[in-house]
Length: 481
Image (cartoon, rainbow, N blue to C red; front, side, top):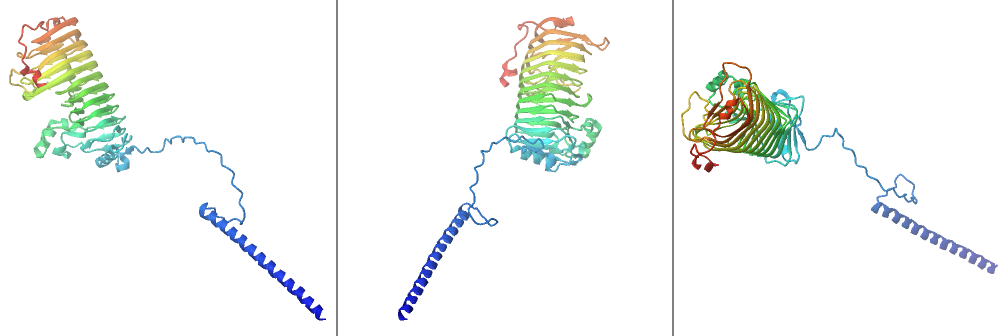
C-alpha cells in the first residue's frame, strides 16, 4: 500500500511540474510578441505618421508605386486681375465726375511706381475729376498711365490756387514711361478763354496771377511715349515737354476751338531727340511750338488746323538767348491756319537757329504759308533794336497749295540777316482772288531758289552771295550756343 501511495504522489508532482513549466513558457512567449508588436506600431507612428485608429490592427499591404506625374502649364485666366495693374477705383476713386479723385490717382501712382511694368489704370466708362496734381518719379522702369476713361480738370477758375496755376497734370523725373489709351484728358478751359471772367477773378482773388495752366506737362523726363489719347480744351498749352529727351508722341488727337487764345497743341522747350508723328492737332495757337534749347526734333505726318501752323519761336524776347538746331518738319497737311511753316524772333535777342528743314507740306486756305519774321511783336509797337537771333541754314522744300493772304513773308534783321535760306519747289496759289491779298515780302534774306516757283516773284526774293552784307560776329550768335 505504501509503495502504491508513493508512486501516485510522484506522478502527481510530475504532472504539476510540467503544467507550471508550460504556463511559464507560454506567458514568456506572449509577452515577447506583445512587446515586439507594440514597438513596431510606435515606430510607425513616430516616423511615418501612419495612424490606424479606424482600422484593424495587423499588417498593412505595401502601397503600389504612383506613376510619375506629368506637369502641364495652367493656361492664364483672362479674368484674373494682374498684380501690376493699379486701378484708381481700387484706391477709392468714385469716377462720377463730381467727387475729387485726385487722392486716389496719387495713391495708385505711388503704388505702381514701385513695381516694374506697373500700370496706373483710368478705366473706361468713368469720369474722374482731378484737381491739379504732381506725379513724380523716379519710378521702376516701364511705368504706364493707361487712360481709357475721361479725366476732367476743375472747370471753375476760382478753385485753382496760386501754386497750381502753371499746370494741371505735372509729370516729372520719370524714365521709360508711357501714357496710352483711348481715353480723354479734358482741360475744361472754356472759362479761361473769356477775358472778362479771367479779369474778374484776378481782381477779386489776391492770389491769382496773370497765367493759365497747361493741361499735361513733362519736366526733366526721358524715354517718354505719349500715344493714342485725346487732349482737349486746355486753358493754355495742351501737351508740354520741358528739359526732357527721347520723346515720342504718336497718334494723339488735340482739339480746342480756333478762337481759344494761346492753346498750343504741343510745346517743346529745352528738349532734344523728339519725334512727333501721325497726329491730328487743331487749336487756337501753334499746332507744334518749338522753343529755345531744342535740338534733333522730327515732326512728321501731322494734320494741323485750325491754329497758327508749326512754329519755331518766338525767340529772343527781353534780350534772351536762343539756341535751336537740327529741326526737320515734313509730310504735313495744314488747313485753315493763320501760318504754315514759321520762324519768329524778337528784336534784341541773341543766339542762333540753324539747320532747319520744312518739306513736303500741303496747305489749304492758309493765310501765310511760309514765314521768317525777325521783327516779331505781340504788342501794337515794339522798340527797334540791332541785336537779333541769327537764323542760318533754313530750307523750304515742296510746299504747295492755296494761301488766303500772302504766299511768303521773309523779314530778316538789318544787322543780322538770314543766311543760307533755300526755296525749292514752291507752288502756292491764291485760294480766292480778292483785294485783301498781299505780295510776297522779302527783306534781307540770303540764299538760293530752285524752280518750280509759284508765284514767280518768289524767284527774286533771296539775295545770292554773301559779299553784300557783313557777317555777324560771334557775339550775336554762336558763342552763346
